[in-house]
Image 1 (cartoon, rainbow, N blue to C red):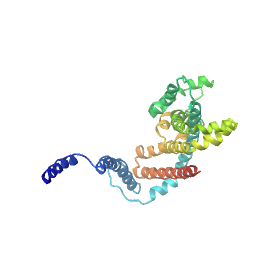
Image 2: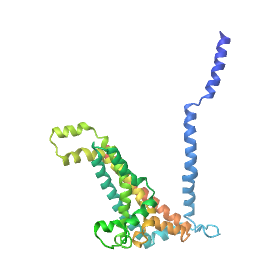
Image 3: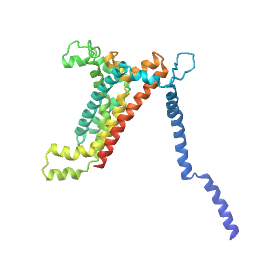
Image 4: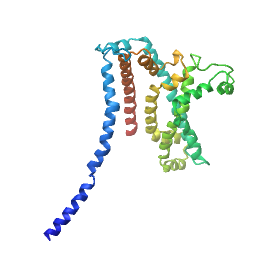
Length: 301
């Protein structure tokens, strides 16, 4: 009996060695991901932070000299930088507000059964699947005063949207709304589909009006999803570069990302551009933190 048990144990051991434990499988997936984040995210982040305290220039064949907080002081004391932040704030407010209104409105319209609903939803999602550079060039042609369809449809003649200092930022924001409102629509649809149907049935039995049902049932239950969409779109709108850079060269459309690009790759002031990038990062994190705190309060209700 002992010899039989020993043979069975020896046969079982190789089988155990061939398989991976739960810990081994977990490490197999986690370790490459952690290494990828360290190499491509964390290391450049720390490296650029070090450069933000120097006078380093990528185009100069000279070592970086430590200058302390000089770059940050000069940037925060530059009125032109604050003008770029004001332009960015205007752009974020117009763009994100439009995306939330249009996206949520489309979700309310699609949150019902009708013929070819899947096809209509897919077509509405197409803009956010396109390249931002392609979208910028496409809308630049639409806004063209000579052959663009926008002026023809609105009867504005030869009005130059992108050359007009007052209208250029608004025109670019409309492009961003067209591209990213479907993202808000998609998240809103997910939230609306999760609202229990019995709540609407109870409201109908109590003869509640449409506005009351929307204000008391739909909006409170979808609010967390809307806030998540608001967080994502605010962060992305604050970093907008490609659409604004392609569509207009007006000073009134120079958002902070364009200023950062010029600082880094036209003036080749690498140290100062790194400092500006960290100022933008801190502002985005501060705004996001406010949103997250408010999101937690909404969830607790």
